[in-house]
Length: 203
Image (cartoon, rainbow, N blue to C red; front, top):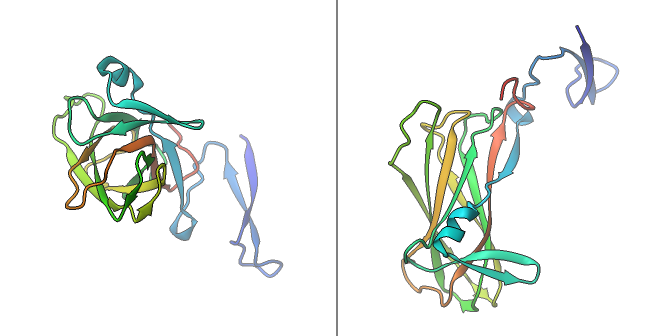
């Protein structure tokens, strides 16, 4: 049996230090996090490129060394898909998807709205066809061409379990008013979640 001695900050309650304490762990035991000790991790959600290639849309856009996909409102196949397994060290609270990208046209005090649709399944399920939509509208302010944005979507935790496949679809829908000129270019999607352990014992 291998035993590890860990020197951890901010936890010792003895006389010699207020900053450290030693904890004995047996190899194989999970290292759990609690209360303020929980932290956020992030995973890229790779866009399913094969689907974009097969459909021929959305249109690929380049600016400098960066590439993305331009989203108009509606249109056949003008949508992006991604999928990520729910990590084993997720603490069960709400997750966040961040969409990064830029405007291809200058706008002043205009709006654009993105819709993130999500669903999930576990092994043995019938793949579902019921989705939850999360709509986020963004005011551009005074935005030059190629101004960048990072847009947050809240994925509520209800009905989602560790190890499940979490699928998303990203589309652009009508803004409530003052629609932007041009299109929003999506460069990437990141899933951000809070963890309660440093990794999982099982995959």
